[in-house]
Length: 86
Image (cartoon, rainbow, N blue to C red; front, side, top):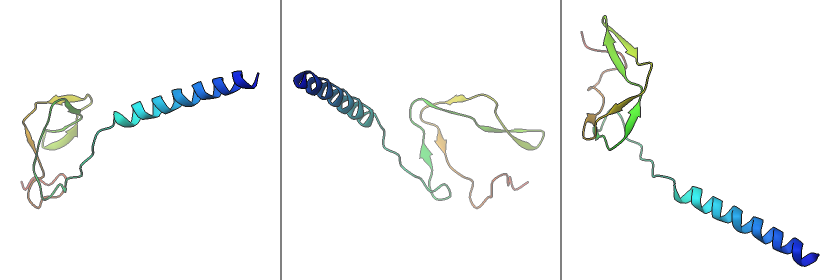
């Protein structure tokens, strides 16, 4: 009886450890880039919503878009969000 309980607890412990290891090994490194100082080059499979100009206003897309690998992204020099210098 005691042996059976220990075996059950050991199995649960091993399964939990394997699950936690699998989850933690699958994480990616996050790098914060200062948006006003740096330009970045996009990697593969970058997806998200983007702003586009419509009738002189910035509008957020309703759907996610896939941005091509190799595109550059960064902020405009000294401009606040929405400031186009027009």
